[in-house]
Length: 111
Image (cartoon, rainbow, N blue to C red; front, side, top):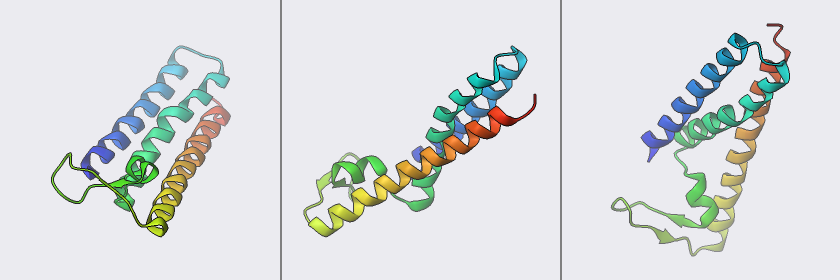
């Protein structure tokens, strides 16, 4: 699962860079650079989950998997469930902030 999250990060980073270059090459209005928010946020989410060894999707749904691949179990402890959902929210918020920062920097670059 960690490697899959890293791949999401790599693909999102590549899409952000390629998208930025494409927007520059075609001479698009700089406001279009704000769309880089989406791949940058996806990239950040993948990297944050890989670094933290935590799946935000599982955490938000209240499930976990420490056994065989594909076998999911419900989190029954209410404190653990609250903690998992809070971590999922922090990852989402962190990814959104990083995506926004990347998009605004791309917008402000004088190219």
